[in-house]
Image 1 (tube, rainbow, N blue to C red):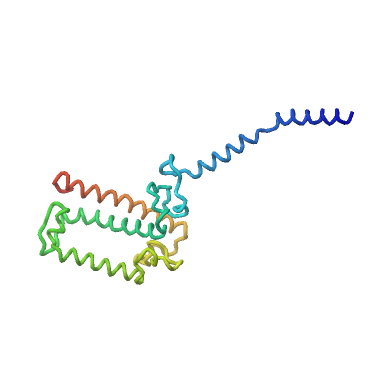
Image 2: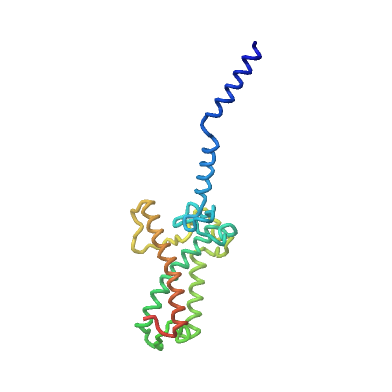
Length: 206
């Protein structure tokens, strides 16, 4: 009699479990959400790089996986500096078509400007940029030593002559940093297009 009761209860428990909430579906949803969260915002069909997370301007774009092999602080410093140089280059590329430094020959094609000013002027740029790089990094100019100090913030050279960051909250500073990064990225593409326009067409930009 007891065995019969136990058997009946076992069958009832087994049949009841068939009508229980489907946990597997929830697990699939959780796994799917986790996988979706790891996907890149910029390129949704590839996984987002883990090492870029938390940086201002991160959209999960690192198709060549540079952040897996190089120090992320060094990469961010490089991006910011190239962006700043490109913004200045875009401005100079246009200005030199209309303004000529006294004593120098005017050229319409900005790509010919280095030839117009000569080797000495170009070497001065390389020399003084090297001095500036050495000074701003206190002599630590290699990737291994540039960020030996944990307080070293990529791109922060303490240069704010107009006091634009004074009295700003961290959120406001991050917003300004994002604007600089986006404009820098645009300028890097722009200066490449401007240079190649002159090369391909043989004509000045404007």
